[in-house]
Length: 303
Image 1 (spheres, helix red, strand yellow):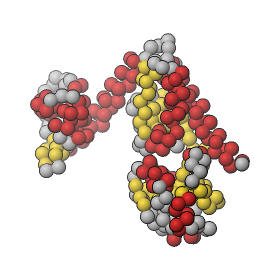
Image 2: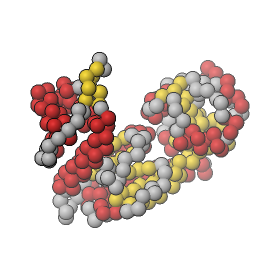
Image 3: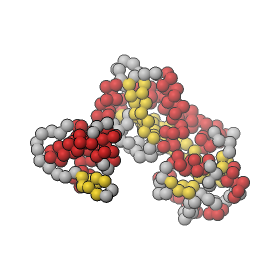
């Protein structure tokens, strides 16, 4: 083990090899040559005094030492990315990069028109959108602003509650023409249901609120929210769906209106970013756009 401090490039290479499982794939990702990637890993191993990867038929497998280093390398990566985002923006005008974290559904289905209006008003603003159901840490600056379906619990966050998005059961008209419409919760057991291949937070909430649904099996399962929504639209079966989204598709029919799940919605960012012009206008645009989106749900219930 050496006492010299390794270059950040070595950690960036280390993360790429971890993610891709081979020197060649990491080289393609980073735009470097395979020998350069190999030299970076050799230098990092010499610095930490431990082997980081072992070869197998599946590619390069991380050792315990590599797994121990991983969270620290990821923190370096997010800090470096945040530094570059801060440096990209002028302090007196709206410009530079803002990274937004949102769930797959919100990121793909809801945010694009909101962000289109934002960038039309501020042409020098660059948006990075992380559409994933994984929660990115705002304190570690993995994202600048997050749209979350749970109340933020960390201190040092500036958070605005948007309201509640309602989830209801829906099916495509084509499905109902083939299989009929369930008239009770019990009849759902005789229908094709669409759901996650793992138990999510809102499934646990659903079972707590409607225990009679426990034990119902799914005919179509996926760990991807967009795949589930497209299965619903294709007429594969019955699924939970956000009410404002359902209003956009006249072929989706609401079933069993007594079943409804609330999805609490928040926009949050680190309080240190409130003086940043690019983050402030982005935060305000997300709040305004999501309030309009939820308003669609409220108006639908009244009509």
